Image 1 (tube, one colour):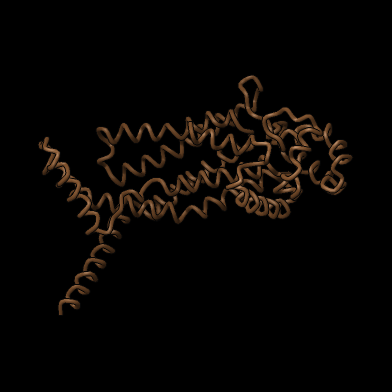
Image 2 (cartoon, helix red, strand yellow):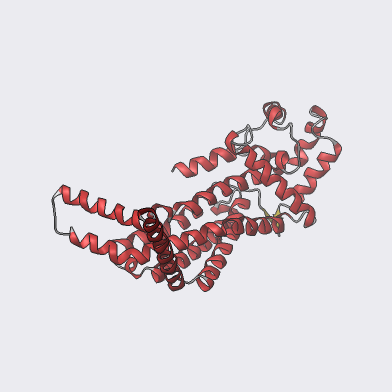
Length: 333
């Protein structure tokens, strides 16, 4: 799967991430550094707050998506009328005419149905890459050892690195590596930085769970992270699907219903699978993000309900159409 390879590449490369995302790692790292100061180094509390903030940033995109869905719902009778007109025709030319009429309808109504689905998801994936950056490369982007990247090959040789996640392995075995790092790279690993890394590591636990570890079925209670990641993602998908069905009842039947069921299960299963491939801290982020998404969806449904969205869209469309007609009259006059 492309997305999975994309994420694991960013997490496992010895040069501390993909170059295209390094500005994002730096930005997220500075944000987490500030939150850690505010919350007295309580890493997971800072991560929760960080997740809520990123979700708030995405909130306008979700509202725009709701508005686009409302416009699509309002146009459904006209769309179905065009489709019914050519339903029994097998002539390819009629199919072309149907597409042209649909495009003319969208153009006349100022509607682009392609705006409906991918924006928020794409931004969520970008934010996920940023989160991976601060989880997997904290020595560079949170602790602030900026020369780490330039000397990563030498550091790897010094500690005889053979693991899957470079900086995470240093954190996991820091008591073993700290004297080597301080001796061979004294300008980077000063006494102050050594203390900062040790303090940072001490806060990467939830109870007895080391959240730098990659969950495995044989590792006991830590498998709760992938399970909760799946369940919360499923809850988010179910809430989203119910809202869409309420807004557009036509999706509750036939092929559209099957497509929605597939989409509803796809992301939770993806979350479950990937949570066994990356550290538990990534899964923790996913859990919090899903819970915040559920709350956000419920708030949106309450204060921006589908019927109000459709009514608001009809009013806005009427105002815009009258404005266009007045402009045309002035031009002709």
